[in-house]
Image (cartoon, rainbow, N blue to C red; front, side, top):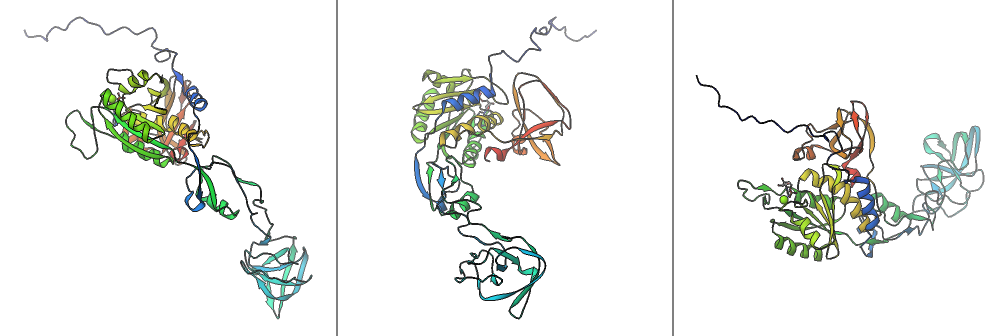
Length: 425
Ligand code: AMP
Ligand code: MG
């Protein structure tokens, strides 16, 4: 009789005593502690220069900017119509028209006598004797007179001088990242040049023997460098200047030389890969040798480990190699740190609560970021939390942040959604 071969009598390991304990020790750094440390230790490293407003979009203000002129500079009409002096009582009114008109850029340089009216066009400075305007749609014009119905409040349809901004007021604070609307404001208040911070140069470097560049031939065991194109464009979208430092194999000498070059060319260095404590983790090994290394096991998913160190005066963020973790760590840790270093000050990403479109049980002990997007007013998360799922990063339009403690999220429960745009993307 032929039986199956006899299997060795071997049992799986027993359940560990700590199987319900916090994952791997209590020495993990909570996300908020790690952020507080970055915030306390980093300083602006950029200079201030002056640039024309036309070239200032996306730059960071190096000092507060004061309005040189009020907006609006003089009282003016908000509509096309007819201007006169004072409030109008209920009932019908007929006023004689003064010859001439006031238009934007062509003021009327006489005085409008009491009880008379003048044709005025939107944006025109109010001439002497005019403080109130009636809309042209509400008026009949005939034989040099206008007829209309009251009541109308004094000042109706006009804008007061400086009602928006007064000359001498702070128009924009130091540290402001200039948006298109800011350029409109600066121009309106007579500012044509602004002090801005020099751009922060951020070097991006990939590490790993397994990496080849997109477009190169990839042999067995090789993978394409997915981090570098992603990180370089993240840096650019966040308003910093990316410096491509290529990739280096897992070779300590090569990495050393490349870090030297990166510290020359940039203010900050982002590496990916090799940040753990393993045999081929040369980034953390070199930073440790340099004596300025903080190895953080941050209580974060996905993300650990993050190695932080200094190399020739340049802070180094040793990001995890895994692209999902590399992106999350860049958004959560590098972005506010880079903002501080460029002179924007520290800023936390703005999120908002939305009903969950999913169910999830989360253990206590670490903060989690799920790849997420909003559909029909609800936060959806990617079907897989696998940290190798790069397609989920691309599918997502933001992150759902789940607090450090335990949580059982049921559909409809509020969860915090942080859109990618809140990180400046
Ligand atoms: P490491 O942190 O170097 O141990 O890498 C962790 C995982 O991320 C490994 O599976 C690496 O192959 C992968 N990895 C590291 N760098 C990259 C990269 N630039 N692009 C894509 N995957 C990477
Ligand atoms: Mg590696």
